[in-house]
Image (tube, rainbow, N blue to C red; front, side, top):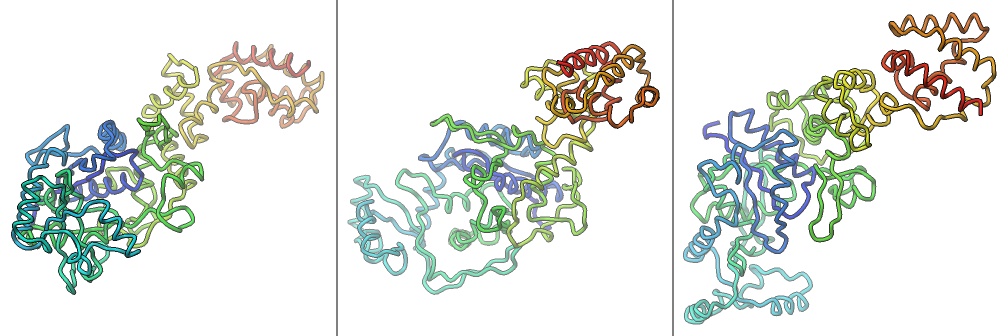
Length: 502
């Protein structure tokens, strides 16, 4: 790789960050790390109609949560700023005017009403080779008419003049040779009436200014690539053009079409990295973070949507991904999103995470449920005992609540039909003689007493579990008793006997 690797993630601050956007950021980040390059965050805020002030901070928070922090960004600038497109506005007009001077673009003065009339007249109307000479632009007006309109500050846009009957070729790092017939491409707007560039002009000008070496972006941008290739050529920068890589789509679970926020709402899973609160409506769209995903699991899941390392390995830390990532292993085909698989990744990451790293997130979940924990050593022991049973972080609340407070309700229906005075007597006797040195000794004592009283241990285990936790769940019942301690275990047995007898 001859030139220094510089890649960019360039989101628009218009709302929540879709998991497809995070995956684009991740693949840029991994490619930069693998090649000792620079990962840039550039904020594409030129669409003033859809701009949301809080969205940039939200995007940064999402990337930080995922652990893929950019090397250069608006808040951490390098020597290629500014990193917001709105702050680069003057440069775009200069290059748009240059394109007009060189015959590659033109002023278009058509009003919204005139364009609407054309669309009604021609149902599939495209402003381009077939129609541009019927419109009000600098190709059909005289030089003096154009000068007069410009002098009068008449609203106008600048459009690229797409050549007729040419084939535009480029090599995509994922898809190989890609070609476009220019007769099917319309004259895209490069500079809007408000002086802001469209994505087409801005992405080329900014990638050149920031010396971007490789452009990773979603497959949905593939149809626009022809315009961008032409602009690199028309601006005289063809030799500096980045290498292109159009990432496969993330598909709906049934594989039909691109995954959208609506699909998540309909099927009950998040598609945003973190909660997004719409400042206009106040509506909150749930994110993976708030649903209880670990960032390691979220990133692991995303990396394998459209990429694999060629082995059967499924669990990768971010460090491993940095070492193993390669563009050659990115798939051309779209990747189906599977929420059950996403939860599987989270379950596996919870199981293998060190207890210390789970302490704070679990503590936060307990606090949200009104359970305050001050003894971190005790909490760590609880986490270690139950983490294999938890798929999402909120599961820790249900799986551990009984360690911090006696049950207030019991699954009596599972005990009552077979509850007898003899069983009550067994538990009273067991409680009187209770010692809890270790789980194995406690279990032996329990079984020995059961035999003495004429019971099979199995018929007493379920009532004992429900006495301690309230229901048919949790780790080994004697492990629970050890953690609760003798006095608390005795108190819970007594309380439950009263409930079972009533």
